[in-house]
Image (cartoon, rainbow, N blue to C red):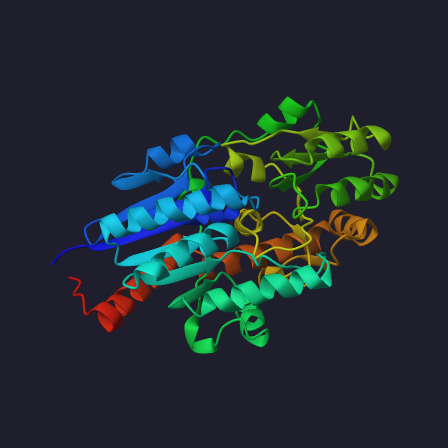
Length: 389
């Protein structure tokens, strides 16, 4: 029996949860059943990682970009349309809002591919003007009409999708974004390496955040919370693992608040498992978040977490059960959450263990790939009458 031809589409190869999910899916899909290709602007921090994925066909679409740019968007649409037409994919699986819109339209114009879209995070949120939010919801509703199946990465996102009437329930399925536990269970982990790098002693509590320094991740909220924490607990150090457009602003804020000795920006790193194991507290300060892939990883590593109560995050973090939930964009609540965990280490350890157990049960990569494989298989039989071994 012939293999099923799958095309995944995402914007670029920069660091991010949506990218990680997509690349892992491309890597772990059974290549004896699927011919897997990835259409992407093939530049970015993770380019080496993607080029090393076995039996993955990489299609460089240079005009794909995050920002709205009508000229580049039209060129990206035309490139995708021609590529899909020439290669006659059975399934086009898109990721994230912008490439999801362009690639779904290109596939729909050809009529024959099954179109699947994963929502890693909504294109609209409560911190944008109401007219803009309404406009983006309308776009998502229109795109759902040409989509065979929409995948969410949390059940709360699925409920939101249905409650806003973006798509009917029968078009939606939740598949948790799985992580590879093996990279956290094994590897060359040297305890104390990060502390030596930072020049802090073993008594210093390390508060960490992993993610882009962007509007969505709101790193400035954590920095604004730090003076409140320092008033109560002096021996702390904040580590930001990531980079992005807000880095200059964050660096200026650190200087304004005289926190140069308390904060280190590491930039992007490839040793995330080792870093997470050094953290005493993990913070997710996002204004909006599909689920939080780095949050999932921190919970698996048994790091007590403080996270904002946005989108799908409460599905992972049950307040005072698997972590501490706080309102978004509120430095005082965030600071109090960090202080609580540091002042109640026994309770923090219990929450961290429960969080680890929850992630282990629901967020393994094998379960995610199994669910995606089942979805592909069912749609291949239903719409195209293809047979898989």
